Image 1 (cartoon, helix red, strand yellow):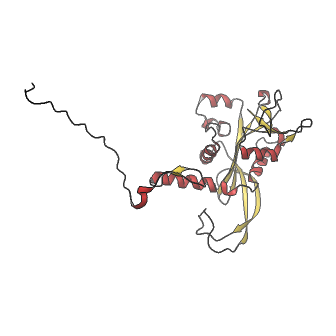
Image 2 (cartoon, one colour; image 1 turned 90 degrees about the vertical axis):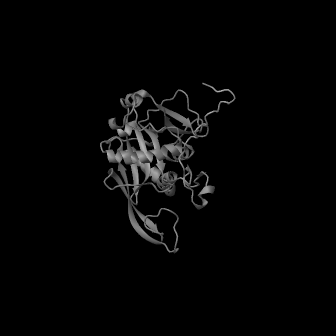
Image 3 (cartoon, one colour; image 1 turned 120 degrees about the vertical axis):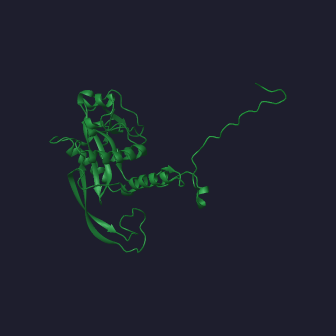
Length: 284
């Protein structure tokens, strides 16, 4: 019952509770920013962001730490190593200290990933995540080198019926510093095309009988410019299909990026005899 002479009082609303965050020193001024070296945006005041950036940064610049038990060695390369003084042996950052340089010896390896070994597949998928992020490419195009264990949807299951392939990693100094994934193409599907290098236009009505599709190729930032990508291409050309001789032009590219287009032009482009155009083999 409402008594005369007294107004009805409204019930005050309860404040929504939120998670408090402790801020120490200069953290109050910190704002999210993008790392100039690895391009990852993160907040330096959030512990989880710091850890995520450290992992991404290390892999993007220096490659993934790699177990010697992972992968079957298909090629080895001896090389001279410029050795400089570092802060510590595990540091992947800039070299500091004395300027003296001595020369050591080392061995690089290219290994083929086994579809039946989950540890190898998992490690390679970690690299592929970085690759796809950098290339802004789909993350669901691994079915052909993973096999049945990596199929997660019906689309990939249908694709596998006419598709197989392999992944190869380039190992240097205990890290996988480069990766390539290639798809074995069925000629009856006629997926091959010629792309004009200068315009990126596809030549109409021509279906080159390509045998391998280069799905992804990547080298970590600190190892670029050292012919690692070319070595990976050659390893894939010679070891994906055992006993089959594959010409360079029979390896097709999947929507090459700007840097990928330069690599394709130097590795397996051809000159059209009439037009003089430089053509790159591609596939869809």
